[in-house]
Image (cartoon, rainbow, N blue to C red; front, top):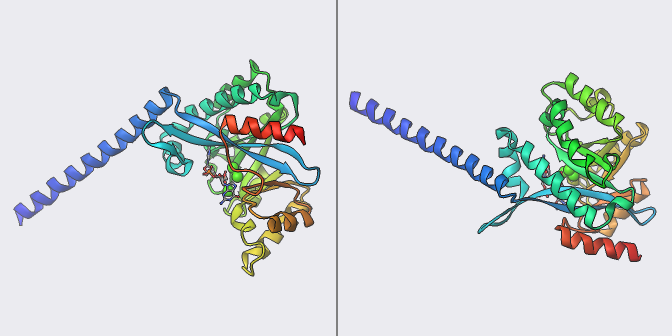
Length: 278
Ligand code: C2E
Ligand code: CA
Ligand code: CA
Ligand code: CA
Protein backbone atom coordinates (compact mmCIF):
# COMPACT_ATOMS: atom_id res chain seq x y z
CA UNK A 1 0.00 0.00 0.00
CA UNK A 2 2.87 2.32 0.91
CA UNK A 3 4.55 1.66 -2.44
CA UNK A 4 1.33 2.32 -4.34
CA UNK A 5 0.93 5.58 -2.42
CA UNK A 6 4.49 6.60 -3.25
CA UNK A 7 4.11 5.93 -6.93
CA UNK A 8 0.82 7.81 -7.12
CA UNK A 9 2.48 10.78 -5.39
CA UNK A 10 5.45 10.62 -7.76
CA UNK A 11 3.10 10.46 -10.72
CA UNK A 12 1.17 13.50 -9.52
CA UNK A 13 4.38 15.49 -9.04
CA UNK A 14 5.50 14.64 -12.56
CA UNK A 15 2.11 15.53 -14.00
CA UNK A 16 2.11 18.87 -12.22
CA UNK A 17 5.63 19.64 -13.42
CA UNK A 18 4.78 18.94 -17.01
CA UNK A 19 1.65 21.10 -16.73
CA UNK A 20 3.68 23.97 -15.29
CA UNK A 21 6.28 23.57 -17.99
CA UNK A 22 3.57 23.64 -20.68
CA UNK A 23 2.09 26.79 -19.22
CA UNK A 24 5.48 28.43 -18.91
CA UNK A 25 6.31 27.64 -22.48
CA UNK A 26 3.03 29.06 -23.75
CA UNK A 27 3.76 32.22 -21.81
CA UNK A 28 7.25 32.37 -23.30
CA UNK A 29 5.90 31.66 -26.77
CA UNK A 30 3.44 34.53 -26.56
CA UNK A 31 6.16 36.76 -25.12
CA UNK A 32 8.36 36.01 -28.06
CA UNK A 33 5.44 36.75 -30.38
CA UNK A 34 5.04 40.15 -28.71
CA UNK A 35 8.76 40.95 -29.01
CA UNK A 36 8.75 39.93 -32.63
CA UNK A 37 5.55 41.92 -33.17
CA UNK A 38 3.75 38.93 -34.63
CA UNK A 39 0.30 40.08 -33.46
CA UNK A 40 -1.36 42.02 -36.22
CA UNK A 41 -4.72 43.67 -36.83
CA UNK A 42 -7.23 42.49 -39.39
CA UNK A 43 -9.97 44.90 -40.36
CA UNK A 44 -13.62 44.13 -41.00
CA UNK A 45 -15.84 46.81 -42.52
CA UNK A 46 -18.97 48.04 -40.76
CA UNK A 47 -21.44 49.42 -43.29
CA UNK A 48 -24.28 51.90 -43.05
CA UNK A 49 -26.81 50.09 -45.22
CA UNK A 50 -29.14 53.09 -45.29
CA UNK A 51 -26.63 55.47 -46.85
CA UNK A 52 -24.49 52.79 -48.45
CA UNK A 53 -21.42 54.32 -46.80
CA UNK A 54 -18.70 52.88 -44.64
CA UNK A 55 -19.36 53.51 -40.96
CA UNK A 56 -16.00 52.18 -39.84
CA UNK A 57 -14.18 48.96 -39.09
CA UNK A 58 -13.59 46.50 -36.29
CA UNK A 59 -10.00 45.63 -35.44
CA UNK A 60 -9.60 41.87 -35.00
CA UNK A 61 -6.39 40.31 -33.70
CA UNK A 62 -4.45 37.65 -35.56
CA UNK A 63 -1.20 35.96 -34.56
CA UNK A 64 1.02 35.64 -37.60
CA UNK A 65 3.34 33.05 -36.20
CA UNK A 66 6.29 31.96 -38.27
CA UNK A 67 5.82 28.37 -39.39
CA UNK A 68 2.29 28.21 -37.96
CA UNK A 69 0.46 30.55 -40.30
CA UNK A 70 -2.35 32.73 -39.03
CA UNK A 71 -3.64 31.89 -35.58
CA UNK A 72 -7.23 32.82 -34.67
CA UNK A 73 -7.90 35.02 -31.64
CA UNK A 74 -10.10 32.26 -30.21
CA UNK A 75 -6.86 30.28 -29.73
CA UNK A 76 -4.94 32.89 -27.76
CA UNK A 77 -7.22 35.64 -26.41
CA UNK A 78 -8.58 33.49 -23.52
CA UNK A 79 -5.00 32.69 -22.48
CA UNK A 80 -3.47 36.15 -22.85
CA UNK A 81 -6.40 37.62 -21.00
CA UNK A 82 -5.49 35.52 -17.96
CA UNK A 83 -1.75 36.01 -18.30
CA UNK A 84 -2.06 39.78 -18.65
CA UNK A 85 -0.32 39.70 -22.03
CA UNK A 86 -3.50 41.10 -23.58
CA UNK A 87 -2.23 44.55 -22.56
CA UNK A 88 0.94 44.69 -24.70
CA UNK A 89 -0.88 42.84 -27.48
CA UNK A 90 -3.64 45.46 -27.59
CA UNK A 91 -1.07 48.24 -27.66
CA UNK A 92 0.73 46.49 -30.49
CA UNK A 93 -2.56 46.27 -32.41
CA UNK A 94 -3.27 49.96 -31.79
CA UNK A 95 0.20 50.98 -33.02
CA UNK A 96 -0.18 48.93 -36.18
CA UNK A 97 -3.73 50.12 -36.76
CA UNK A 98 -2.61 53.76 -36.55
CA UNK A 99 0.13 53.07 -39.04
CA UNK A 100 -2.07 51.11 -41.47
CA UNK A 101 -4.99 53.49 -41.41
CA UNK A 102 -2.77 56.56 -41.74
CA UNK A 103 -1.36 55.14 -44.95
CA UNK A 104 -4.80 54.64 -46.48
CA UNK A 105 -5.85 58.17 -45.49
CA UNK A 106 -8.52 56.99 -43.14
CA UNK A 107 -7.91 60.10 -41.02
CA UNK A 108 -9.53 62.27 -43.65
CA UNK A 109 -12.88 60.78 -42.83
CA UNK A 110 -14.90 60.45 -39.69
CA UNK A 111 -14.92 56.71 -39.73
CA UNK A 112 -15.01 54.74 -36.52
CA UNK A 113 -12.19 52.41 -35.49
CA UNK A 114 -13.63 49.84 -33.12
CA UNK A 115 -11.21 48.02 -30.82
CA UNK A 116 -11.97 45.04 -28.56
CA UNK A 117 -11.04 45.29 -24.89
CA UNK A 118 -11.41 42.91 -21.97
CA UNK A 119 -13.02 44.28 -18.79
CA UNK A 120 -9.72 44.44 -16.86
CA UNK A 121 -8.46 47.02 -19.34
CA UNK A 122 -11.33 49.32 -18.48
CA UNK A 123 -10.60 48.99 -14.78
CA UNK A 124 -7.29 50.78 -15.00
CA UNK A 125 -7.18 54.43 -16.04
CA UNK A 126 -3.38 54.54 -16.24
CA UNK A 127 -3.39 51.61 -18.62
CA UNK A 128 -6.06 53.17 -20.80
CA UNK A 129 -4.19 56.45 -20.89
CA UNK A 130 -0.99 54.82 -22.05
CA UNK A 131 -2.96 53.19 -24.87
CA UNK A 132 -4.59 56.49 -25.81
CA UNK A 133 -1.17 58.18 -25.80
CA UNK A 134 -0.40 56.14 -28.89
CA UNK A 135 -2.90 58.26 -30.83
CA UNK A 136 -1.57 61.61 -29.68
CA UNK A 137 1.36 61.62 -32.08
CA UNK A 138 -0.71 60.26 -34.95
CA UNK A 139 -2.97 61.72 -37.60
CA UNK A 140 -5.87 59.72 -36.23
CA UNK A 141 -8.13 61.42 -33.73
CA UNK A 142 -9.02 59.63 -30.55
CA UNK A 143 -12.59 60.75 -31.27
CA UNK A 144 -12.70 58.15 -34.05
CA UNK A 145 -11.97 55.38 -31.58
CA UNK A 146 -14.62 53.10 -30.10
CA UNK A 147 -14.02 50.32 -27.60
CA UNK A 148 -16.03 47.11 -27.64
CA UNK A 149 -16.53 45.44 -24.34
CA UNK A 150 -18.11 42.00 -24.22
CA UNK A 151 -20.96 41.25 -21.88
CA UNK A 152 -19.78 37.63 -21.67
CA UNK A 153 -17.16 38.61 -19.09
CA UNK A 154 -17.80 40.24 -15.76
CA UNK A 155 -16.24 43.39 -14.43
CA UNK A 156 -14.47 42.93 -11.14
CA UNK A 157 -14.87 46.52 -10.14
CA UNK A 158 -17.84 48.11 -11.83
CA UNK A 159 -17.44 51.36 -9.90
CA UNK A 160 -13.93 51.95 -11.24
CA UNK A 161 -14.90 50.81 -14.75
CA UNK A 162 -17.72 53.29 -14.66
CA UNK A 163 -15.31 56.13 -13.81
CA UNK A 164 -12.84 55.12 -16.51
CA UNK A 165 -15.66 54.88 -19.05
CA UNK A 166 -16.96 58.31 -18.08
CA UNK A 167 -13.47 59.69 -18.64
CA UNK A 168 -13.14 57.97 -22.03
CA UNK A 169 -16.51 59.36 -23.07
CA UNK A 170 -15.38 62.83 -22.10
CA UNK A 171 -12.54 62.31 -24.60
CA UNK A 172 -15.08 61.53 -27.33
CA UNK A 173 -14.60 57.77 -27.23
CA UNK A 174 -17.65 55.57 -27.69
CA UNK A 175 -18.00 52.37 -25.66
CA UNK A 176 -20.02 49.61 -27.28
CA UNK A 177 -21.55 46.66 -25.51
CA UNK A 178 -20.30 43.66 -27.53
CA UNK A 179 -22.05 40.29 -27.95
CA UNK A 180 -25.24 41.88 -26.62
CA UNK A 181 -27.78 39.31 -25.51
CA UNK A 182 -25.32 36.46 -24.92
CA UNK A 183 -24.20 37.25 -21.38
CA UNK A 184 -25.77 38.05 -18.08
CA UNK A 185 -24.61 41.53 -17.14
CA UNK A 186 -25.71 43.18 -20.37
CA UNK A 187 -28.69 45.25 -19.45
CA UNK A 188 -27.31 46.25 -16.08
CA UNK A 189 -24.02 47.26 -17.75
CA UNK A 190 -25.95 49.47 -20.15
CA UNK A 191 -27.53 51.26 -17.22
CA UNK A 192 -24.64 51.37 -14.79
CA UNK A 193 -22.01 52.25 -17.35
CA UNK A 194 -24.34 54.53 -19.26
CA UNK A 195 -23.62 52.93 -22.63
CA UNK A 196 -25.24 54.21 -25.78
CA UNK A 197 -24.36 51.60 -28.35
CA UNK A 198 -24.52 47.84 -28.65
CA UNK A 199 -23.49 45.10 -31.02
CA UNK A 200 -26.01 42.36 -31.65
CA UNK A 201 -24.20 39.01 -31.62
CA UNK A 202 -24.17 36.86 -34.74
CA UNK A 203 -25.79 34.08 -32.73
CA UNK A 204 -29.07 36.00 -33.11
CA UNK A 205 -28.56 37.19 -36.66
CA UNK A 206 -28.03 33.64 -37.90
CA UNK A 207 -31.58 32.75 -36.88
CA UNK A 208 -33.17 35.16 -39.32
CA UNK A 209 -35.21 33.15 -41.80
CA UNK A 210 -35.53 30.17 -39.46
CA UNK A 211 -38.26 29.36 -36.95
CA UNK A 212 -35.77 29.23 -34.08
CA UNK A 213 -37.05 30.58 -30.80
CA UNK A 214 -33.95 32.81 -30.64
CA UNK A 215 -35.47 34.94 -33.39
CA UNK A 216 -37.83 36.41 -30.83
CA UNK A 217 -34.78 37.26 -28.71
CA UNK A 218 -33.36 39.20 -31.64
CA UNK A 219 -36.59 41.15 -31.93
CA UNK A 220 -36.53 41.84 -28.18
CA UNK A 221 -32.95 43.10 -28.26
CA UNK A 222 -33.80 45.41 -31.16
CA UNK A 223 -36.90 46.67 -29.35
CA UNK A 224 -34.86 47.27 -26.21
CA UNK A 225 -32.13 49.11 -28.09
CA UNK A 226 -34.66 51.31 -29.83
CA UNK A 227 -36.51 52.07 -26.63
CA UNK A 228 -33.24 53.02 -24.93
CA UNK A 229 -32.22 55.16 -27.91
CA UNK A 230 -29.07 53.13 -28.51
CA UNK A 231 -27.00 52.90 -31.64
CA UNK A 232 -27.07 49.29 -32.85
CA UNK A 233 -24.65 47.33 -34.99
CA UNK A 234 -25.57 43.83 -36.13
CA UNK A 235 -22.65 41.44 -36.59
CA UNK A 236 -22.41 38.18 -38.51
CA UNK A 237 -24.61 39.35 -41.41
CA UNK A 238 -24.00 36.77 -44.12
CA UNK A 239 -27.00 37.05 -46.45
CA UNK A 240 -29.12 39.63 -48.18
CA UNK A 241 -32.16 38.26 -46.38
CA UNK A 242 -30.56 38.90 -42.98
CA UNK A 243 -29.48 42.37 -44.02
CA UNK A 244 -32.99 43.30 -45.18
CA UNK A 245 -34.66 41.87 -42.10
CA UNK A 246 -32.43 44.06 -39.93
CA UNK A 247 -32.84 47.12 -42.13
CA UNK A 248 -36.64 46.77 -41.96
CA UNK A 249 -36.27 47.02 -38.20
CA UNK A 250 -34.05 50.07 -38.55
CA UNK A 251 -30.80 48.26 -37.65
CA UNK A 252 -28.87 49.79 -40.53
CA UNK A 253 -25.31 49.50 -39.18
CA UNK A 254 -24.20 46.03 -40.22
CA UNK A 255 -21.06 43.92 -40.27
CA UNK A 256 -20.47 40.47 -41.69
CA UNK A 257 -19.20 38.32 -44.54
CA UNK A 258 -22.02 39.69 -46.73
CA UNK A 259 -20.17 43.02 -46.80
CA UNK A 260 -16.60 41.90 -46.24
CA UNK A 261 -14.43 39.42 -44.37
CA UNK A 262 -11.84 40.58 -41.87
CA UNK A 263 -8.82 41.48 -44.03
CA UNK A 264 -5.21 42.51 -43.68
CA UNK A 265 -4.00 46.08 -44.19
CA UNK A 266 -3.27 45.62 -47.87
CA UNK A 267 -6.65 44.09 -48.69
CA UNK A 268 -8.42 46.67 -46.58
CA UNK A 269 -6.63 49.45 -48.42
CA UNK A 270 -7.90 48.05 -51.73
CA UNK A 271 -11.38 47.69 -50.27
CA UNK A 272 -11.31 51.37 -49.33
CA UNK A 273 -10.23 52.42 -52.79
CA UNK A 274 -13.21 50.55 -54.21
CA UNK A 275 -15.56 52.24 -51.73
CA UNK A 276 -14.20 55.67 -52.59
CA UNK A 277 -14.86 55.04 -56.28
CA UNK A 278 -18.52 54.24 -55.61
P1 C2E B 1 -16.25 39.32 -31.74
O1 C2E B 1 -15.79 40.56 -31.07
O2 C2E B 1 -17.66 38.93 -31.57
O3 C2E B 1 -15.89 39.51 -33.29
C1 C2E B 1 -16.68 39.02 -34.34
C2 C2E B 1 -16.18 37.68 -34.84
O4 C2E B 1 -17.09 37.19 -35.83
C3 C2E B 1 -14.83 37.77 -35.53
O5 C2E B 1 -14.16 36.56 -35.29
C4 C2E B 1 -15.23 37.87 -37.01
O6 C2E B 1 -14.21 37.42 -37.88
C5 C2E B 1 -16.42 36.95 -37.04
N1 C2E B 1 -17.34 37.29 -38.13
C6 C2E B 1 -17.54 38.49 -38.70
N2 C2E B 1 -18.49 38.44 -39.63
C7 C2E B 1 -18.94 37.17 -39.66
C8 C2E B 1 -19.93 36.48 -40.46
O7 C2E B 1 -20.62 37.04 -41.30
N3 C2E B 1 -20.10 35.16 -40.18
C9 C2E B 1 -19.39 34.50 -39.24
N4 C2E B 1 -19.63 33.20 -39.06
N5 C2E B 1 -18.42 35.12 -38.51
C10 C2E B 1 -18.21 36.44 -38.71
P2 C2E B 1 -12.61 36.50 -34.93
O8 C2E B 1 -11.88 37.53 -35.72
O9 C2E B 1 -12.19 35.09 -35.04
O10 C2E B 1 -12.59 36.95 -33.42
C11 C2E B 1 -13.19 36.15 -32.44
C12 C2E B 1 -13.30 36.84 -31.12
O11 C2E B 1 -12.01 37.06 -30.54
C13 C2E B 1 -13.93 38.23 -31.24
O12 C2E B 1 -15.33 38.08 -31.29
C14 C2E B 1 -13.43 38.86 -29.96
O13 C2E B 1 -14.24 38.50 -28.87
C15 C2E B 1 -12.07 38.23 -29.78
N6 C2E B 1 -11.03 39.17 -30.24
C16 C2E B 1 -10.52 39.36 -31.47
N7 C2E B 1 -9.56 40.30 -31.48
C17 C2E B 1 -9.47 40.75 -30.20
C18 C2E B 1 -8.67 41.75 -29.54
O14 C2E B 1 -7.83 42.44 -30.14
N8 C2E B 1 -8.87 41.92 -28.19
C19 C2E B 1 -9.79 41.19 -27.50
N9 C2E B 1 -9.92 41.42 -26.19
N10 C2E B 1 -10.56 40.25 -28.08
C20 C2E B 1 -10.40 40.03 -29.41
CA1 CA C 1 -16.11 42.70 -31.05
CA1 CA D 1 -18.27 41.85 -32.65
CA1 CA E 1 -19.78 38.37 -31.15
